[in-house]
Length: 148
Image 1: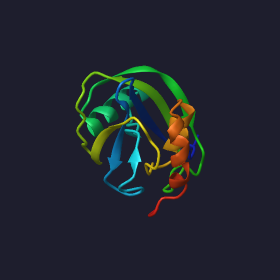
Image 2: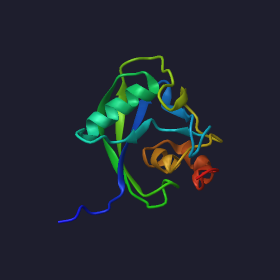
Image 3: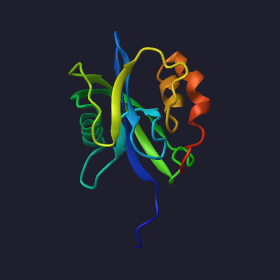
Image 4: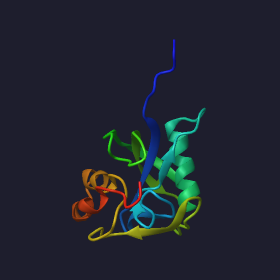
């Protein structure tokens, strides 16, 4: 039987802290270079989605995290301008306090207010779904990548 053509599987870590807000990374590469995003990336062969989430959080923020719960699965074929992706999003709690952007993240910072923040992909919708009310003001900035 031939291997089916399917969307690429990704993970995102919504790292939240009640005092500091949500931890975002600034993308260092296209698509959406310069925009802020949830730490995340592609699941590697032989890796569970939970392992991928922990790895991506560590690589992009320098922090170890604990997965609290599954927030949702986001599968809009237009969520990534490169190709169809499906992202499994986890709510995470940080174990450290000082993030440091790494891998393909140019920076990593805590945000308590997301108003006017340029968010990548569909991350404004994910943050709004998770209860970050100011994320709705950022939705329009995520519709199209400046460079596909």
